[in-house]
Length: 166
Image (spheres, rainbow, N blue to C red):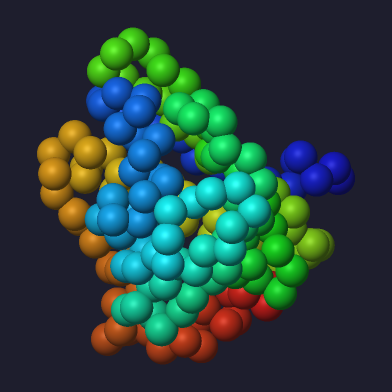
């Protein structure tokens, strides 16, 4: 199985301009409204940034490897034992509509562990894009990522460690 077929993916139409949608992923002041709770800085090529999910007591290092304004963001994500690669593509459909697609590759798992990692990636990025849509189009933070693992039902730290080592 090639690395391209070992990927999580998600996509969504966002009814905002490509510049606004692109900036929402670059600037942590915006991104915290639909994905993580804190970012150490804006994404820039070869700059290490740390994203934090405070509700899960979890942080991950991110290093952007490609940024094409209003077209693509590619970064290495150090959230797992070995880094993976995330590519976010932005397609301007017209001045008020942007199609966003996310491809997450580089998983070093096999068998059931690979299937679980791909399911987690696909469902996670689907929630991120749904949260982005709601935030960008309606100015509402649905807390989708925070609510995926309610603390009353899950030990967050153990669950994230387990998923990171799959």
